Image (cartoon, rainbow over all chains, first blue to last red; front, side, top):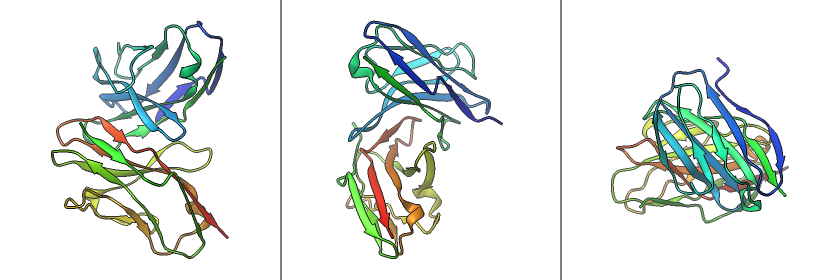
Length: 111
Length: 109
């Protein structure tokens, strides 16, 4: 199993550009989530999904969209990138009450 | 709403010394507590969870409901323990994790 994979590893955007961060898992987990990691602020939940077709907002959802059309994939869309979205983004998945498995992260810089 | 607090952003100890990483939480129900660790250039991974009551890599953590704490302890720190440590809480009825701010542990030779 590849576990949780994320692409790209690094990305630089200009303010106002849009992009999609990809996340995939091959463990048949129903629960998937996106976090951003910022120094001194820990990991903050952006959006999460408890199954295909079901998504909900986390702690810091503004400026981000998600969809869950399949169990395996959970892409995160930045609609109009802002410098405040410079961060490291982690995707995670789990069975609902089990350990969360994290992807390797995407380091995003918005100029 | 639940909240997790790790009061120390940075913690530095010498090899062989005891180490304690503090974690306090606020939650009205009965939570499940975790410690996650991120070694340099590696992904975040589970270190231990309170319901397992196990020792992983010499680390233990006891849930103290009276003090609402879940401190991580190791009697003799090793250089390879240097990493970022996150305490996390999950409601018993849900899947969402709430993370603390993280503590960067450095173990000096």
